[in-house]
Length: 345
Length: 130
Image (cartoon, rainbow over all chains, first blue to last red; front, side, top):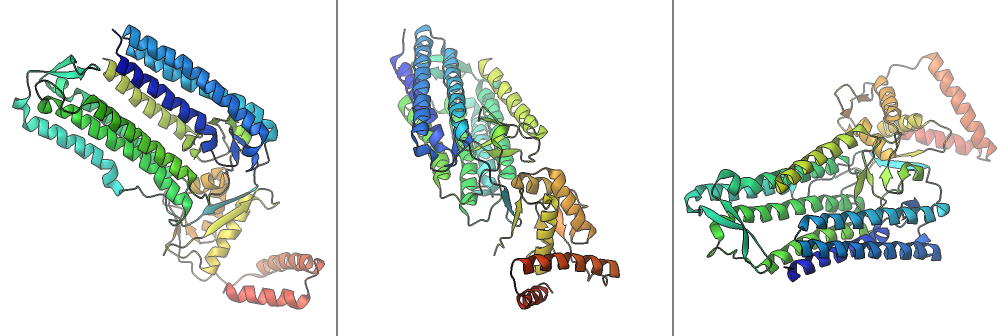
């Protein structure tokens, strides 16, 4: 039987993803349009408006396809199909971006020949210090400690999953794997995010502490840290579930959980957009246009940078000509693989 | 108080990039804008921020290390050293300097800069870089 609440949630997810994807061209630096270096006022030209219009239409067509997949996922009860919808949306965005990149390339301008670096500037410090990164691990450890201390209070069998109407449809039992299984997944995700944070802090461009670039780098670092805290809180709650059930029901309504998740994702996105919109005293993007494949993937053996500013959306991307980038990708992908294996086991 | 010392290079300049780095850093070192104990960015960090190959930066640091300005022997750290007074320049060094100066002054004169301006500028710079 179709669950209307689930369908609405999935369709809302498709729509939010579509809106975010359609905004990616305008989130880029003023001198970048669809991954091509252009004059700062290019985006107000008719050509730029036309390429963005086409991009937006293509995204929404793909979203329609993703919505149909969501419908099929709910109708057939095969929720894993939803991941296909995500692939459709992201794949279509990449293809549409490539089309925009091709249309914009004839308007490219030459890169600046001057470069600069601050010799005594520090790498960006972690917002909240080391505790901001270790805190999520500690919170999870505290939750686990509390559960262990109250082990005998855990029912032999307890619900772990509920349908849209709040009826339990999945059960766990009082065992180490039954109670702490999700913690292993959370730990791996937290480790991935800690690696991303450390990698980003180490490789982000250095700048004086009173500059907008420094503030932007710190804001970018705050994003994975915020996600770490959200994941830690969510999984701490999952671990505590057997102890906080009231008559077999989860005491927090699903809508509150959903709003919490949306608020967390919204806050992370807002932080990224706000950081990108700051007055930018950054030196110009020095990466050569020809090293951007499809305007999205950076490959430049002559550039020692491992992390460079993205041209598709905001944040950073890797220089795939550097072995460190491949090592980083391999470690992250291996950890993601472990998480997916554990989640679907 | 954090000091902001910027290194600028121009890829279109006929002067090789590594030489631009050496000359700019040496100027900062002589001017005391960078002092003993300061830690300069590692070869990879500086190369990444300038968008050049790390061999270019490594070559520049090696040259400064040979002159006694920096210590690059400890892994990735590039530390500025307390440099002892260099020995008195030999005749060949003075001759090389004179040749370069002659070309520079000829360029200045060709651009209409008066001889007394050239000499006062040279004197002021020499005093400032004591």
